[in-house]
Length: 425
Image (tube, rainbow, N blue to C red; front, side):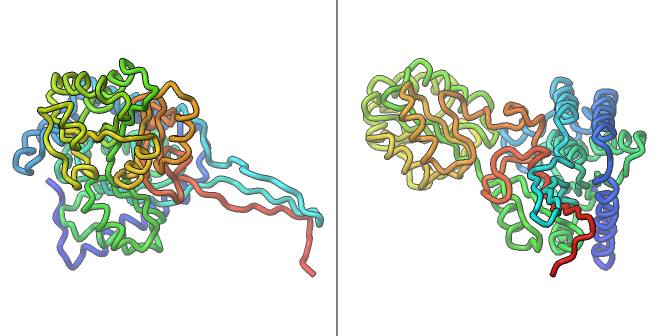
């Protein structure tokens, strides 16, 4: 169970965690790349060695899931097995294999007076990460933070409390063995929700807050945080089937985007079909989706071609179902598809299926989204799939990072100016 802290001492307790994180961040910022990578590989070894203990902890979380009212999609996110634990370890190793962004010279110039001006990439410092019932995210976030020289304060959901606690224990054991600051990774093991508010007020110690979970959580963090917030809002992802699409390819991409794993943010929730191919495509995709147990709600044109489809409401076009339901609309043009996505989408991931390069370019340029997929499934908007190793989230913001956030996205820069005694006149 999570620790209970008396209200009178909650502020001091949280302040102590943040202060230790700040001290760890200062030390970790100067840690050599090789030492950070070796530490992460050691953490992956610990995760593998501790698989039985992690699965035992996860079983306790899964057993408690009904009492929290978790949906089947949420239970799937929570559930670990040996394969998923191996995936966690492999994800940490993939982060270790990434080039270290810290210390990179982004720009360099020499002024007329001889001053050498360099813009150098540096860690952000301390990250407060609030997330819900996905224990693999605990390991991913810790790995990305350590690799980028940041300390991280993890505030996981109660649904995965046992799993997260055990994973963090494995990671911290590896950090300690490698002689790095153990408090670079800390788990807030306090049940009181007021603890979140305490951390969100500590802009003198915490540099960035990242909420990853439901919209209510994100809106609370945005409302209360005194430091910048990197937001990961809903994944209302679209697949648009253009008039020039290969319909077999469109079917394959749509089924994968929607059905490969439904309870994740990069699963497709809406399908748009050009009117010129709707009669040929909609009945076949409806049958394919039906075979996967997916219900369709659609506009009048869709319901005419797919009589089994329900009527879509205005709310459906903006809904992230995270389950076996999809909204479908027939559009008159690519511009109508773009307008629909920009009005109803969540700026997460949107795909076009087309053999027309000009249409693909138009879609990519005009859709306001973090990731555009051309003839590929929305499910590829993922740190691992896009070569980042692992991610701490997929930002639907535009500042300071957008899309999957890996090590590079947890850095900023400083100017380092070197002179030979110059003074300003």
